[in-house]
Amino acid sequence: MTGISGKRILLVIGGGIAAYKTLDLIRRLRERGASVRAVMTPAAKNFVTPLSVASLTGSKVFEDLFSLTDEAEMGHIELSRDADLLVVAPATADLLAKMAHGLADDLASTLLLATDKKILVAPAMNLRMWLAPATLRNVARLREDGVIFVGPDDGEMACGEYGPGRMSEPLTIAAAIATALSGETAIPLPPGLARPQGVLSGRRVVITSGPTHEPIDPVRFIANRSSGKQGHAIARAAAASGADVVLISGPVALPDPANVAAIHVETAREMLKAVEASLPADIFIAAAAVADWRVAEASPEKIKKDGKALPPLALVENPDILATVAKREALRPSLVIGFAAETENLLVHAKEKLLRKGCDMIIANDVGEGSGVMGGENNSVTLLTGGGMESWPNMSKDEVAGRLVTKLASMLDGGRG
Ligand code: CTP
Image 1: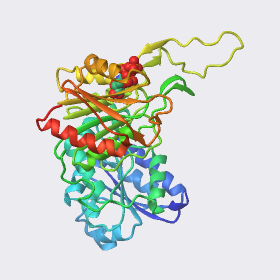
Image 2: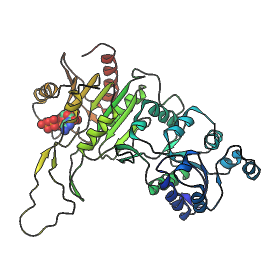
Image 3: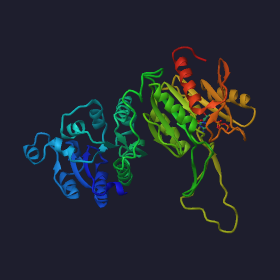
Image 4: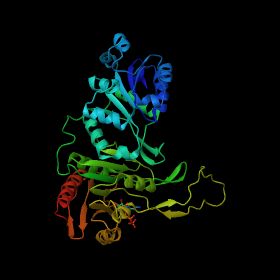
């Protein structure tokens, strides 16, 4: 982590339970040769004390916008002028909202508004706050402004719920800081370009993508060949058409698309939980290749060869995410769209899935050997609805995504089918 040594980091500590992890972050940054100055919001002091922050940073903690002593020692503009990077950890929903709207009513928000340095934020909040339309809007706006996000991660939260909202681990944040300092972060799109007004403006779209991994033991899992390319392309296209997009992805080797709220999961059951926590939505698109089965009881220890019988792997069926969402009584999205990846009798199976799963459209694609669809760049799809079907020529997954977005927008606007 060469990017960090000798750099000056101005750390804004927000008021959240994750502030205790920020103490470790300070330690990690200093170990790597950075100097850290800390600013605490008034709420942060409910979670960690200025004294512990001061002893770890080895310097005074700044708290008050109107402190004459602070201004005499170092004016608040100087504080950010003097830094190579501003880091907000934990970045609460409130701090993100203030940043997105340019509010400056305390020292932390004033510094964040007054700086011309890069800002990296590590959000932490309750999952419903993270997935709230207002927060998604604020996050999208901040991304457009060039703010760098690390996390939040999924996991068990202090409030007892499971989902996205946990602050990333200090080592992950330190790595993101090193990358930001080395200047390797993506150049932000000019304001307005990333989130144009489009056919899905004001709509919320939830998309699953990629495979799921179902553990057999701590080192082995059941998986499939899905790359996530088609689902991620749809997320990009929907965001480019103005939608608020939540992308719930299994393990893939793709970066999170810009301007979408990305939630990372491993298993089918985690994916279902994340989808349900992301509702309500106008459109749900199940593009993930969800593993149909999981091992009834994954072993907590690595299964060893004992030279005798092969280990029996009893399988149980995973929940069907698409059917569960399509058959919901409350909060059923207006459009529920599934894929049918088939190797034979494509249209027969697809029609059967449309009816059995109760969705509004099935996008059938041939994933047979030689089709090149799984992992490839192109796709040939046939769209089936209750009203009929339409086949599209072979085209790139991005083109499929673009045409699909236009189609879904017109279905939402009244022209179903
Ligand atoms: N799907 C889902 N949850 C599952 C299985 C599938 O949400 N547990 C969704 C997929 O995202 C896709 C659609 O259902 O949109 C069809 O997936 P597919 O694997 O083709 O169908 P299956 O239901 O698994 O049926 P089969 O494996 O018998 O073809």
